[in-house]
Image 1: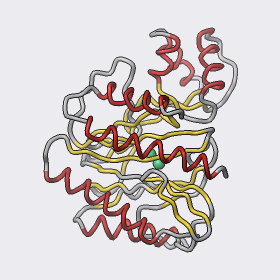
Image 2: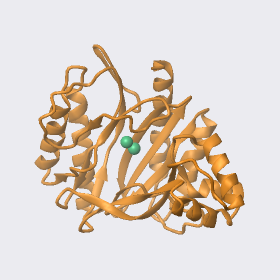
Image 3: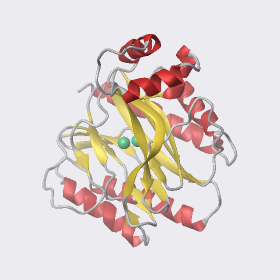
Image 4: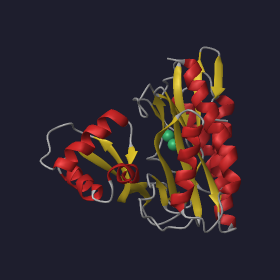
Length: 292
Ligand code: MN
Ligand code: MN
């Protein structure tokens, strides 16, 4: 693990978080917010680890604006973005209430407190079970439910979900946090605590590299392999490079099983979801919140 790069990616993410938070207002196009964050990441000498996720209300995660998106910021908005330095990743998220609604504010507070309480007990000796327990307990103390089928994750170079799951609910795992990089991300909801796969959210990843008949598709595939490798990318990034015709080719590549498009993780009954996330570097006796 390249600790220096892990810390550098986190520092950039944390700074951008503070910079962008006051700029997010009701009525601003989501496309503008996504591009503003992604541009800043590049200006600061890093790359987006994945497209900026801007998920609203019952959308918990995995929505990014399309190239011609006209959605305006509203509701309970989750801003989730990743910074990558030479493949070492910082993943972080915050939620904002753009309606001045007590429900939204309380959900946000529940997810923020859960993340804070998880951080308080976090060390290389903490079990995954205990982290889930403290997250669940905190969210329930606010009168809400944690989303049980969303979780944090370990990260490796160029690998956002590298195998270890950090649960948001009580469980009996006695496995502890080994040396490594972990995203912890509590989700609080006024629903029952489950999301399902909804509509597609304009975020793609290379699934299976094989031949396609579409010439533009072939070009896009080469570009994706060279530019994003194993990391997710936005359809709008491809449109920027190849023009509007790329949309059809992306669909074709998806139909051929070469690309996968993520569905939007959506609360089952349309209830609202808030999220908070930071990345932690854990090593022996030390814990660093890299994205603070
Ligand atoms: Mn995230
Ligand atoms: Mn994450």
